[in-house]
Image (tube, rainbow, N blue to C red; front, side, top):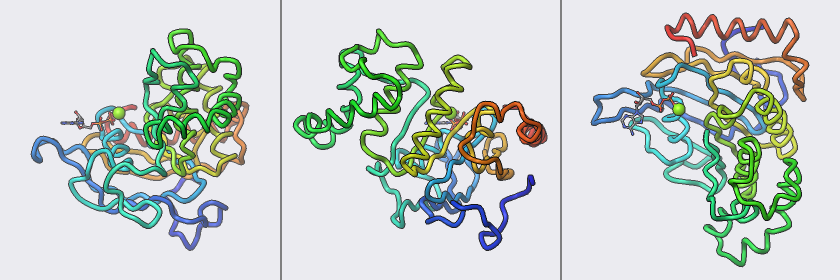
Length: 273
Ligand SMILES: Nc1ncnc2c1ncn2[C@@H]1O[C@H](COP(=O)(O)OP(=O)(O)O)[C@@H](O)[C@H]1O
Ligand SMILES: [Mg+2]
């Protein structure tokens, strides 16, 4: 059950036969003119509609990896291919979400959601997407909050707004850097189930950085375990729980086994996440 990723030919689970979306080969990164090795060479293949998580100790290079995938930071070595083309800068297929909601306080919820469209295509284009933005807000339970300002939102509501802002551009891939870690546990569980629902309904490919082992197991098809800095993948654990995942599954023996196994591998790696 818990083994390294099998060769592709042996994989039979649905999305593992799907089209490759991301292909990283030997991607590495050092900072400060090579003095800080942040990321040792990693290979990564993400298939369409799959959900993968990365878990590892802090400072091991997780955010660095995500920024390289997003085209925000260039790698020091290796190649990043998205949809058959090298990633050389920001791409419109990519949606990103960070730990903090980073909404603009002087803009309404609706205008915050539409911001990527107005930046990219202008004000008129954003106006034409009003209904889409409203539908997204409804999808995440924020109907009626369109005209509200961010300071009137709870942390969970602000993060839900930033999910909508990410989704309005209809990204094919979602890169998520600990998006719910500032939320309390109940809000976080709820958001995770929301995130799964959104990904399933849009066949989005998701890549999530998290510090939470249960969160990684709950959401993922594959969990990548990273070593301490310079980070590299120690192992890929395939989570063979059926979809849609539910919070009730977190109380099952199988779920607990996955959590314990991943924790033990992280402990072997030297530092507990
Ligand atoms: N812009 C930068 N300049 C120099 N060092 C950096 C920079 N960004 C990150 N680092 C270093 O690289 C390592 C990995 O950082 P990061 O990718 O943020 O780790 P993580 O997200 O896993 O906590 C850390 O030691 C960090 O201090
Ligand atoms: Mg980070």
